[in-house]
View 1: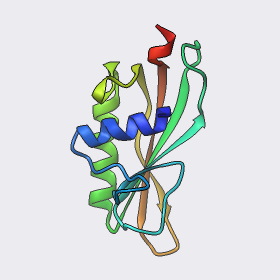
View 2 (view 1 turned 90 degrees about the vertical axis):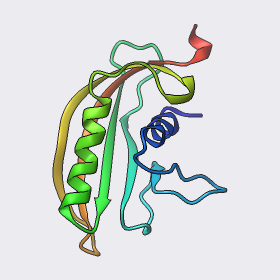
View 3 (view 1 turned 60 degrees about the vertical axis):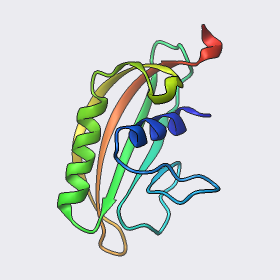
Length: 131
């Protein structure tokens, strides 16, 4: 399981949505933001880094919604929950230290006028194989 999937599972454990996979529909995705559902969370690596490396990884979280309230508040809650996280992600998948690069910021709307907000995280991580 890659780092984006692990962060998505952590957000699910925090009650922010359901991780989508090949078998189950959800509203948390990694690497893509599909056309539906309207309200969703998408995780993207702007620099995936490598486990155990000094620079860590840069992860962008994008939240889409039909209105500013959902998109902004969900994005800001993710920023608050993940800022200064130091420990294991949910289900003990990876050991991480997270630094918030920026909190929720509006990045416009998509073609269907759904509102987009994003926040960015720096994630230093190591997998079990690194212990």
